Length: 294
Length: 248
Image (cartoon, rainbow over all chains, first blue to last red; front, side, top):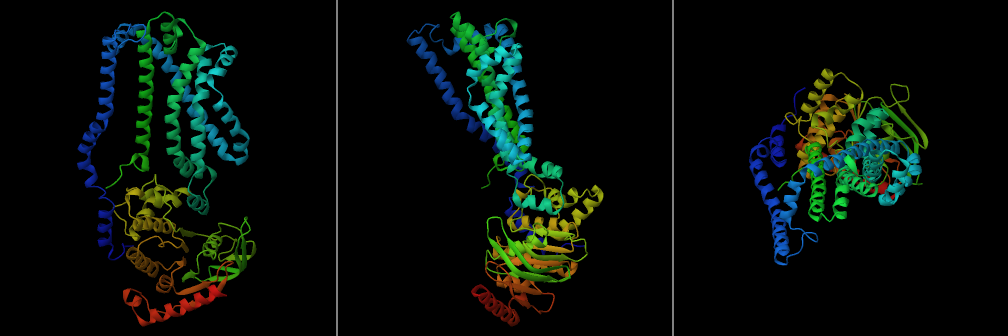
């Protein structure tokens, strides 16, 4: 079977309209990407530098004592000086955060899949997911720490409770938002439930899931830090939150700031990492990851 | 005869009576248009013929027995493509779902993509295509199973007129070669006269067929038909019947 007559002119016209599939996009915008990136990064970096300079000047001019407010330079030098104490704590916090996020992702997706099996299951269980979400973790962390003897496990549970909800709720929403006409089409071609799930519902849910994951990444860190505060563990197993507490007790305020800086930095890295992941997965098709034309 | 609807009623769960006492035969190899005002249940007829719903009263028979519609291609008003999949994967979807071996599926996919004139766009994503091209992908997907019956639910309604004329012509050329049966839903008198061998004019809701018109025009139809006195005459008479049907 040959192609239709007079289709060639239509195709070239359409290709031009579609933004030139293989020519324009490949070469030209790449350099613009780099420059665009630099240009976009410039304003926040400028604000940050200005803020730090103002902070350092304020501390020096007003001669604020370091145990009230240390300047950024002192914080930085403390970070370097105390690296041997702070770095192991960072690893502890990271391990708990990572584990909590992993468990939250696996459990969250499984719970969402369970919810979408029937409205009935969703209606019966969803309220309890909400209850777990709205109960402040600070309030239940002491209980969990009493119940669960193993401290890292208790911390993990606290962080998980905070982190799992966005994944559950977003993934459930995503699994339920598959195009109805596509569902009809799958039915027409006799697709099994499994096929509908793998070929339609799961890809439809992907942008929602990744959005939830990005929120949960930050929450897992917050959850583990809050839980560490409550647990107040000492010794080798102590995370960054404990370093903040300890520095507070011993008036080592620069170290407190250094630990805080590490927590914030970790949060930013988690966010950037998950944003990059989301972009990587969605870049070929989803509006969120695609440059607007024109 | 491909399908026969007898005294079909359709009442939706929310109480809306979409169809009442609808009779319709779909003959082998014909290009049948369902023409009617919006909301008259044209799409409902199509969904019932596709087996995508139960009748509330009356009966539907499909030829080939076993009470099932058999191989059907369906084209919706919107292209209804999977945005995460390439043109090729979208077109191959029906074969993927049926577990057709990859080599065979590949050959049939290429054939279908060729038929709608999209060679070279196999690896493009839907968002990179124009509205008309997306519709072509949707048609290729419907054709990839070699269906006996092609159901089209106002497929070109959201396209601009130039693109629509082009797709009308291409569809006619394909149909002339392949001769599957087409049931085409439209609210355009002009489009239905241009494309069809027979038009079923439907009443306003609850819908039933008010009258039927056979369009006897020489094949192949092309732009000369669109400007011929015969075409005008048919448009005039079908318009009058549609006006009657809406009034009744």
